[in-house]
Amino acid sequence: MRREKGRRPRKKVCSFCVDKIESINYKEIGRLQRYVSERGKILPRRISGNCAKHQRQVTLAVKRARSIALLPFTTE
Amino acid sequence: MKKYELVFIIKPMEEEALQAVIAKFEAMVTNNGGTMEKIDRWGKRRLAYLVKDFTEGYYCIFRFTGTPATVAELNRVMKITDDILRHMIVKEDE
Ligand SMILES: [Zn+2]
View: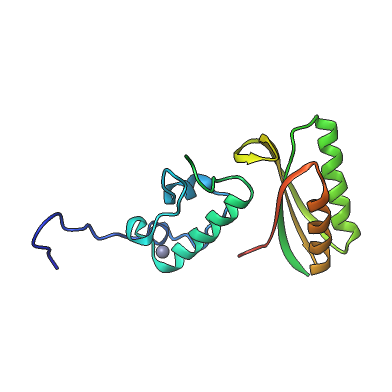
């Protein structure tokens, strides 16, 4: 489908599926950091392009990383 | 018996004292029906936010098998230990 105006949104692919990653660990903060905004919020699927399964894993991993101070809850 | 992973942050202190804290909790795993599999010292890290007014802490990870009782006892004691800034126990493969 093509929109009348504006850019056509690029088809997003789940980077975890591409890399064939089965599970996401809360200790891999280098990777997790790509899925949180500058303010520390978890990016929604429409931005991250993750599939539902991996988005759930990202959410859980980010929350765990936050609880042991590996990632911030918020950043001012 | 299930596999667990315990992450805890010890407040900054001297190496010897650090060793003592780790040894104390290692013993607690064994004394409560658990078996230690691996101790992984991450070392000092900057914390993502202030915890009890500390900006950094010493991260340590235990991999062990145990029962819910092992986990409950570790949780209880970690919570009341001043030297522990934060801790978390998760089942492995979750
Ligand atoms: Zn995926």
